Length: 282
Image 1 (cartoon, rainbow, N blue to C red):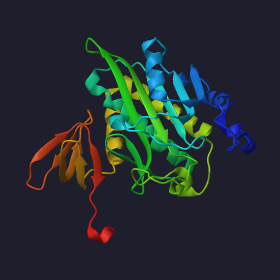
Image 2 (cartoon, rainbow, N blue to C red):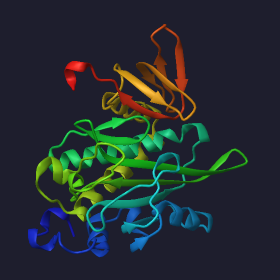
Image 3 (cartoon, rainbow, N blue to C red):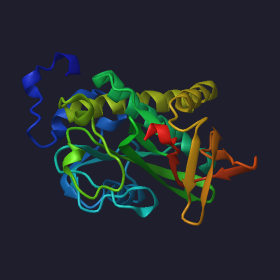
Image 4 (cartoon, one colour):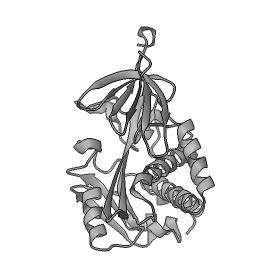
């Protein structure tokens, strides 16, 4: 069934996530082959990593309406309202060296912001290393985890939490400014249709990037253009230190180069980055 032929009333936004509808929208995608839906789960990434270790095929996907122990980067909790957002993880088995895994995080982010733009017109950006932002607020986050054996990547689990039909302004004690598609557009969208579009784009980008080094470079260029921090004064916190400077570049392995106030060049593999604001911008 083609998504364009579906009538509006077939997307009942008051119902739990409809995995069967998603499968029908995915047509012959690799992500259609093994879809696992859980109303409630601890973490889609943790669940899928176990399946990956047991030999589940590439394209296996775990989706949940609610996570009781959702994971963010650096072991943090990912908070999401039940039945409102997208919480899912996909399994890939690429022939890539470990230092090239950032390519997958990169195309996953691009698939996310491109799907959102195509469905809603919203122009989301990417905040290094793996967050989706809009208007200075967090729209979604990515968690990439992989296993290596004897220097060879065995599998990669890509997880995403994306705020869709939730209104974060009604929540207390959120760790950072948060937004959603609903907050930005004041309209609810079909999570099934949005996810099917995102997965089709991810598969397309994955196949192109793995087959052609020039395509991979173009994806990197597009990812760089969508960066929310490059060329800006930022603060990076690593847990051990707090460093200020200009975000001068991000390479294809995901390493951020920062130029400090005294002109020194510092490189970071991970950390929390925030854009410094002038007094007039507050």
